Length: 119
Picture 1 (cartoon, rainbow, N blue to C red):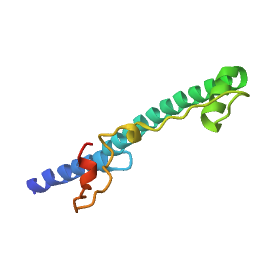
Picture 2: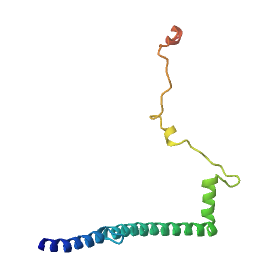
Picture 3: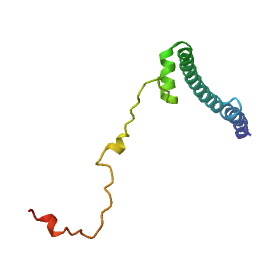
Picture 4: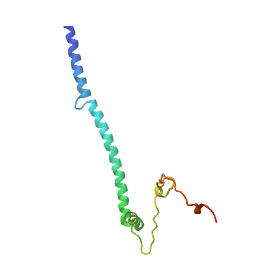
């Protein structure tokens, strides 16, 4: 009889403890919600920074003629009248050490005797 008196309060305590940790409003749920909140706050700060950057770009597009001209030149390739544009090959094409040598024939080429002797 005495053993049963220990099991009932212990069972009730375990039941309460289980729902305190694993329940809908338990400690694990609170922990996951706080992690989600931190991730959302981080995302909000990133979006605020992006909004500020875009707001500054809008202001520059509306008021800064040099910025507008640089975008027109860079993105659309626009030039002023009588302006000459020089285009150079990229660094990969200009570097001879990275270029592949032209294919050669495996058979040796014989030179005529008159080309090797000096007159």
